[in-house]
Amino acid sequence: MIVYLNGRFCPADEARISLLDGGYLFGDGVFETLRLYAGRPFDLEGHLARMASQLEALEYSWRPDIRELGDILDTLVTRNEWNGMDVRCRITVSRGYDGGELLPLLDHGNITPTISMVAQPLGDRLVRWQKDGIAVEPLPFAYVRGNFPHLKTLNYLPTAMALRYAARHGCDEALFIDGQGRILEAATSNVFMVREGSLWTPPLDLGLLPGRTRSMVLAGAERSGLQIHELPFTLDELCRADEVFLSGSVKEIVPVRTIGGVDVAKGEPGPVTRILQKEYRRGVRDALGG
Image 1 (cartoon, rainbow, N blue to C red):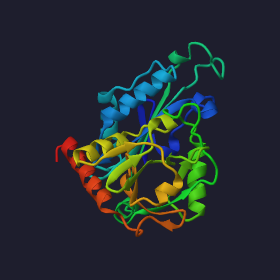
Image 2 (image 1 turned 90 degrees about the vertical axis):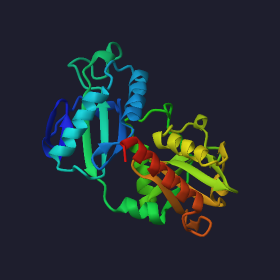
Image 3 (image 1 turned 120 degrees about the vertical axis):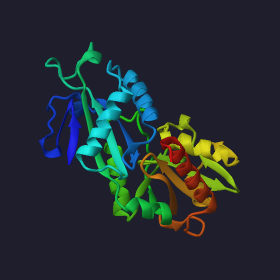
Image 4 (image 1 turned 60 degrees about the horizontal axis):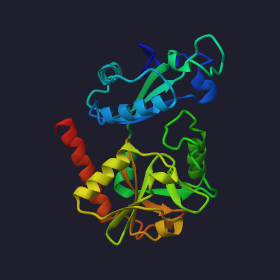
């Protein structure tokens, strides 16, 4: 597999970063994961705009250039012979190292960052998820993303631990719940439920990541005439919903079949979820020109 690192393309097993890179030592960096349809990136502008905002919050001077990164993506797809394939790609920016202090406290914005891209074709598992739904497992303890819930930083350990916990219970995703028993999000997704024909999702001010796909789902629901509630709800309310689904840039919209081993409704994807899946795909086709 060919990857991109700091201006060059190379085999993944030859890619090297400094042991003193701020991303490695301190999790000082951000990332974006996006999907390419038939080798063409979807919502690249939106992802890079969010990355630029996050880099500003972390006091980086470097900003992503959509033309430059778009060209890199095209080359990455071509070099890996993935043209015409659906691909997931992660763009990572970390602090780098300038030869001075390991944890610079001043002028750190001007350190040359480490820029990398890693891509991989999507398998058929996601197609099954979208068709049949998945099982999710609530974490048995309160979860708080941290002091920067709006940032996709390189501190991914809580997410990795949550996914491993879910996997041990035979599930594909984990649900995060705060200290007051309110649903926040899933490990790699935003959470939605359908109740009496209305769409519900947790509000951002609870401390969750404002997903790019989340905003698109809400826009699609509005176009479909659904009443939308961005309000808190509990695990018990979620389990009693008519439908539950998750959203993410790569997974799109995935129905939830069971929560903690309990069937959601009849344990089958519901009609509103199917409508929003089609609406989302229509948006992708329109954006990419068919």
